[in-house]
Length: 124
Image (cartoon, rainbow, N blue to C red; front, side, top):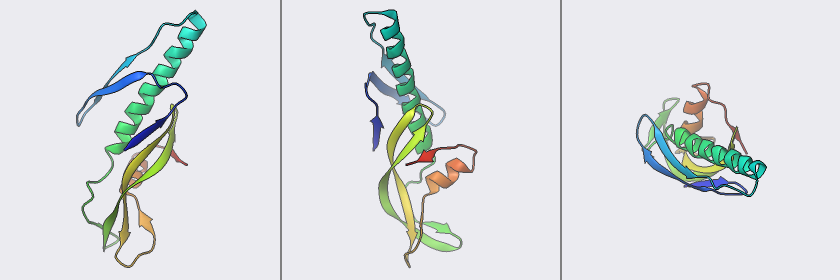
């Protein structure tokens, strides 16, 4: 589940996603003045950036199967939502969060894998 937070959601959609890219289609309306049209273009570009960023980040998630962390079995608690910020704004992404059978600290492979590749996101 992905929720985008934006004041003016343009008419945009993800057309195709594969292992190497995402294709996004957007319609940007012409406004009553050039200044207002430029604002609409900026909002549209930011929305495309949000959609592309959330798709890219979601590629670092797991499929929910059990994993080993520090030699111990961890199981997914399910996909839990979290708010992320990027240069284009913020969005909510549901991702797998894991915990060991004995409880304790949770682990999110998506965040660990994305950050280990020098991708910086601010979580809210």
